[in-house]
Image (cartoon, rainbow over all chains, first blue to last red; front, side):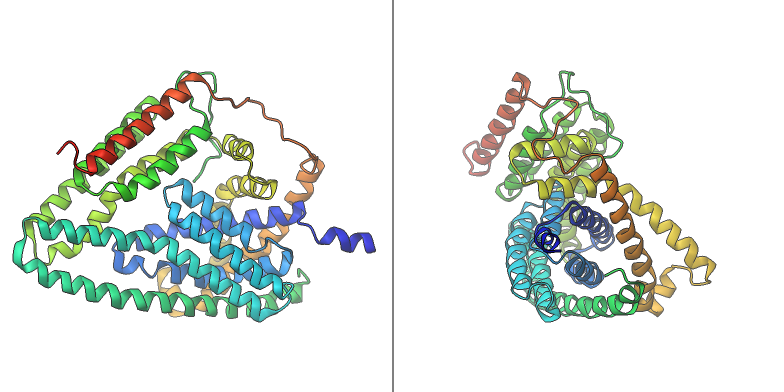
Length: 203
Length: 243
């Protein structure tokens, strides 16, 4: 029995497989959402929010099933590597940094404290947001620079202010919505786990 | 990123070490922020097209060329029109900026097999926790589609079809109906897969063997040199040495 307890502290092959499968779902989800919301930057800004809502139950299940150091870091690192290979290296960096923070928060509650798990999840999704949306701001700025220097001339100043307002406004709104949906995701996740998984004895 | 059916032959002249391709991806990511002018992006895409042709991915090269030309044409057209069209122009411009990354995406998904990628990442020195998980993730991509269609069918049998109208009417309920079977199924699959992997000796300590040996050959160095020189050239091009 004691031996069993000691073994449980380290990540086993079962945990790796579980995290791998769930990162596959999350990655597929991220790709589908990117294609759908990629129509315009105004909608794309809210893609992390939708992502956070749907991934909430998945991360809750991982945290409850694995309960060891790495439950948040490894799936987020996998997502970061896969998306980084496709050119989103900013995401790789932020996701790993925020993943470590989230891991430490969840670890301080020994993966038992529901509040700490949800805080960790929200932190992780914030990192996801930062890495994914940051390039859009950079490119929009360049576009404005280039367009104002270009053909259109005087009426670009008006457009500039319009884009500026939209950026600050939509930016703030999208961060807040991302945080709220991440929180909702954990609430839904907890409810789903209680309603279905505890009854079925899978946890 | 469906890499399960990519076959590679490491003895061919145009086979490039996956690690070199990883470095190329990194350089492309940095170049995305260095290259600002339209001409720079076009030059960057030109290299990607050349690389895709070299790797024998002719279809991808053609698609990348069409993608870039169409988007470049659109940016020019929208900038010329001015006014509100410039608002849509932002979107088109961002897509245009990402054109070299589309090339990278084709390269990484179509020319590297999953096991090769995992092998290369292991050789770089990533921990086993990451490489094993990544291997599982890549192997699982195609299965998700199958599982999803099974769930869709069973929802149809219960007279709750998964369509846009239902999703808009009761989003949380539909989310529960899709997520719970999916999660249940995958928890079970994870247990079975873990047992199968243990039986096949995945927990054996020490380095994992590979059917094809990965090693850096002269052409890999030439490839890397070309990529780096081109990046340096683009850097100077952007700072206006040639202009």
